[in-house]
Length: 81
Image 1 (cartoon, rainbow, N blue to C red):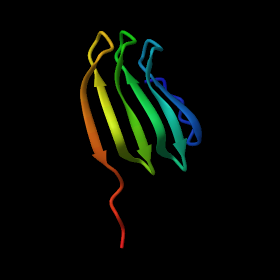
Image 2 (image 1 turned 60 degrees about the horizontal axis):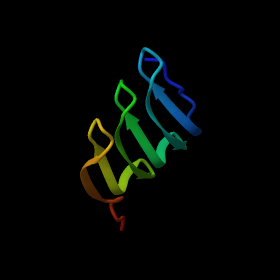
Image 3 (image 1 turned 90 degrees about the vertical axis):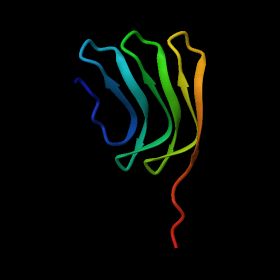
Image 4 (image 1 turned 30 degrees about the horizontal axis):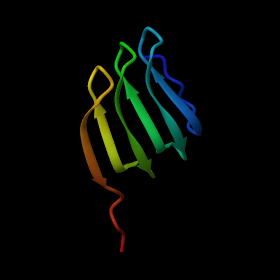
């Protein structure tokens, strides 16, 4: 797999043919903020946000036509203390 392995800033993962597989932001090596995943045909498959490497908020899975198929509400990072 041909991936941009930069630990900071914008990050893009690619399929072997060069098509975008995933893209988003990395901070301190962790996934952060809004991320999107794509199928090999280029259609969006899933999207949602991360906080310190953990899924948070609303995550949407899309069908091949681009319509929301499933919406999942993530609880967010576990509370410490």
